Length: 120
Image (cartoon, rainbow, N blue to C red):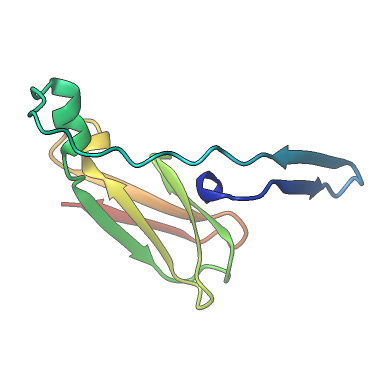
């Protein structure tokens, strides 16, 4: 979200104890578009890795408080519940350790809702 900013953004966090933290997120210089080279570049292991398409698995569950923070475990990511209380997570299977089966937990940090799903 913040990588495409064209103006600086002031972020202010107010804690329950009354303390306030402020930060300024500055803009980044726009990147110039690079013209494709006429000569083919030899393929490297890094370029093959950057080109690969992620293998994703979707995990969904119901029963969360609308808008609550939902932890995705083994904790590989976090997601938010929708306005209807549903949570969704996309998991890159190549980031998981090699195993025949995996289980994913969605945990609602406010509601305490816990959903365990198997990736197959």
